Amino acid sequence: MKKYFFACFGILSLIFNSCTSTEKTADFNPKFKLLPAEKIKFNSFVDCNMAEVWVGDTFRIFPGKYGEDPLWGYAKDLKYADGKSAEETFKSKADNFHSPIMPKNVLPTEDGLHGAVWFETVYQDAKDKSGRTLYAVYHNENYPQTFPYDSLTNAGYKDSPKWPQGLTGEKSPAAVCRIGIMKSVNGGKSWENKGIFIEDLNARMILKPHNTSNTFAGGVGDPSAVASGDYLYLFYGEYGYPDVYEEANYDAKKEWAGQCISVARIALKDLDNPVGKAKRWDGKGFNAPHDGIGKPIASLQIPQEGGGGAASSPTGGFHWGPSVSWNTYLNCWVMMMGKVVGKSWKGSQVYISFNKNPDLTDAMNSQEWTKPQLFFEKPGYILWYPSLQPLNTDEDIKARNTCLKLGKKARFFVKRIKPGDDEYASEHIVEFEK
Image: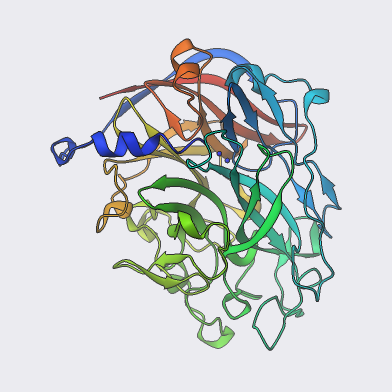
């Protein structure tokens, strides 16, 4: 199934350095309001966060999906489109989207790219003044048949009669998600796979009879990445069991406690060779290995008494799909997220949270997100991949704003799904207030 982000980071360090501790107040609670706007309907396939970047005077986006998928078929929907502004690019006609050159899938037992990928964020290397060196953070999905278990490395997944159900019916298998990095040196027109950023191994997959949600067997996915200091910070959904999964010892409360939106980081200097280099938050610091067990951001979890639940539960009860941006007007980070309340990623609400710490490298700064507030709802629809986007203003164009850096006002986009209606669109502008 997939799910469903972005870039222009080099100038953020100037913003970080200009912020001071006096801006950090105990009653930090930015306000916002949604204003009706002309509807913009996206004309290409979206099933992920909207990855985007300015390359010189060109605003470029990377929506879609690429690669092998035994449930939905081989995909060639990962495209790019250009414009002189975000609005012009988002209004691109279908025939103005182009396919980048992508690495090929390898055989199940070979080393290389397995399964399908979706670009969720694009980090732009600040050292390349041309703006053409890009690193795409991608969501990757696999199954036991595309990435079978290897007992020597513990990589891959064991086929089992108890493997949970996927999205296309009782006989379809659930996917496992993980997160990787690709690199481009020509502005995103071709890409080289650099390997997996973080993942959960087979031992943490949640099987039947406990996993009945029609979501994932486990794993990490649906990320959004931002640069702070010398690191790329990855905010992502955690869907695995926070221990070795054993049917006889399964604990739903334990699963809930280890899931929701989590964070990991990797040094920017390691992006060319990322495998094994990332560290996950473990409750005290970035100490857990890339394939180890970390802890989610506690303030973003939904308490069990408030309807919170495990990702394997058919009733859901968790936030997912973060989209993070730096807001130059509020001087804080803003996170958009969805909410799952039932099987197959059902949920009709979008939430928002704020983090007042410009520098995420200090102590608990990456954890200090406000309690999620309801931002938008559309009853009768399933809402996926909410994001905030730049406006078609001289200010936003001059500042080279993207979904990773925004100001007082921004466009709100979200994928809306119901029978006979599936679109990624915007009908609102959000205005923030201090």
